[in-house]
Amino acid sequence: MKTDNLYAPYELAITDMIDECPRGIHTHTFFEFVYVIKGAGVQNINGDQFSYEPGHLFLLAPQDNHTFEIKSTSRFFFIRFNATYLKTNTAAKGLVNRLEMILRNISSQSGCILKRENDKQVIESLMHFIINEHMRQDLFHKEVVDQYINTLLVIVSRNISITLPDGIDENSDSKVLDILNYIQQNISSPDKIKAEHIGNTFGVAEAYLGRYFKHHTGERLQNYILNYKFKQVENRLLHSDMRISEIADEFGFTDKSHLSKAFKKHTGVNPTEFRKNYLEAAKTH
Image (cartoon, rainbow, N blue to C red; front, side, top):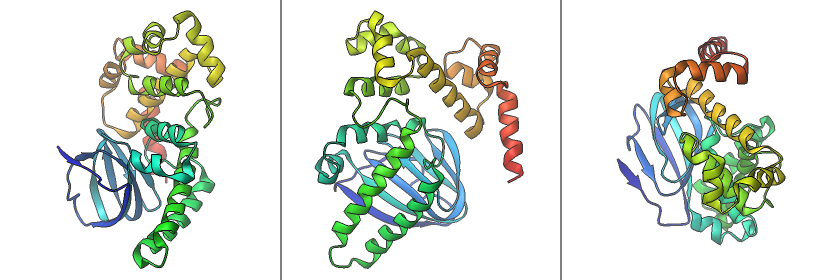
């Protein structure tokens, strides 16, 4: 698999794709915003498929792999940046660690990362301004683009934070942020997300871990793990063609029946009904 590197703090690029992605499936060592200017198709991210259309915004983290399946001629605007950009960004000083952690939690997102309707309109205008500055190269264009990207990062972080516990914000204790990140990275490994293992990993006594987690997040540890796991199951059902037995195996359920019973208890419908309802609703739009 091809791996792309970034040798500047950030770079901007506009790319047209007619029938296929010229890079094929690839990964990279930096963050990458993908904004859809025109066209339609599917973006494959880490094996999951997400439909795209104009106005959609995706964010890829370092080591994610992706490619595009082009259904109609598409134009993408890419904003690529690395950890160096975050750490040398004076406008983000004081938020760097939290901002980087939130951005790395995009694994909890499905498809377009914009969840707030009002922000979709703001991002559309913001992208228009960034593209204009990038194309025209007027006096002080770099300083102007820097300010726009700072705004973009904050708005995107706000949208990603919607999926984090209510008690989490930019002032949250760094250890609980590390624990959240650890749970999300290991959600498909049941042994690694047991309270005993998490406590040992982060130097927190198992007897105290639950109270510590709830104090800092406002949510019980096991509730968060369960809710996050079922969110990922929903993502697989909606955005992949995986069989239910395969999803059950990925997330540590005994078998298809075990997953179906647990999922129905959590959502009110079984996985087959959940997927069917989504597909039927998509056909009506």
